[in-house]
Image 1 (cartoon, rainbow, N blue to C red):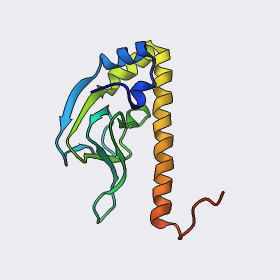
Image 2: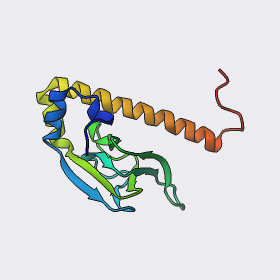
Image 3: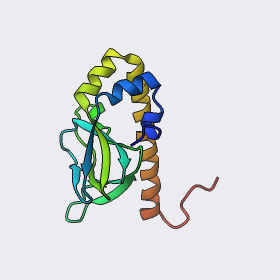
Amino acid sequence: MTTEHGILASLPTDQRDQLMALAHEVTFPAGSRLFEESGRADRFWIIGSGSVDLDLHVPGRQAAVVGTVGIGGLVGWSWLFPPRQWHLGAQAHSPVRAWEFDATAVLDLCEKDPVLGQALVTGVARVVADRLTAARTRLLDLYGPYGSGPTR
């Protein structure tokens, strides 16, 4: 697995090395759940291979997939913000290899190294903003009237 993609690539080398010292490699078979919506968010993952579907509970139906995270992508950002509960669920779409990080250890490291903390928060904010934009587009595709997209 490489650190040349996604949020890891955006970190300065020294800070990336400090963060990676806290990582351990994990695998998930296709179909396995990483976490459930509203559960305790105490870790996060960066995908090395495979993909993970992010889903939203829909009462009386199957969970609705609202996004897919691939190589280099961050799975889980809820650990960064109180009350530290997952906003979505996550399931391995295919076999996944990832780096797993304990949120408490990462938060402690960020407190000790403000440069890392700032870079990581900025990277996570970028992920959140991108996912909100993607979710908006997906909702417009699913529920908006035909031709309701931007006319600029």
